[in-house]
Length: 62
Image (cartoon, helix red, strand yellow):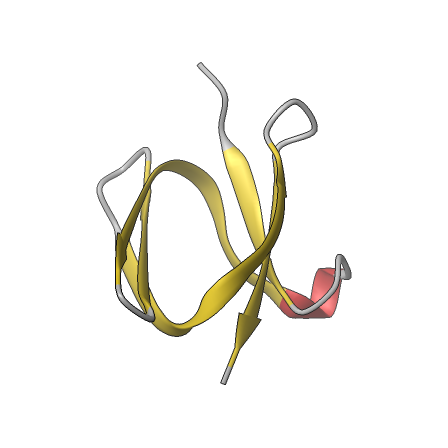
């Protein structure tokens, strides 16, 4: 199982939006991240990059 940490704009500890993300849903500019416990985090933004091997997702968020 690959779990990811989602960061806003750049990979820094202060920019963590959510951790242990197992699922990502996209609906237009709405991104919903669901962690292993089922907690949902929804933001307005867009993907910048995803390194699933390293478990890192970067998003541009408002």
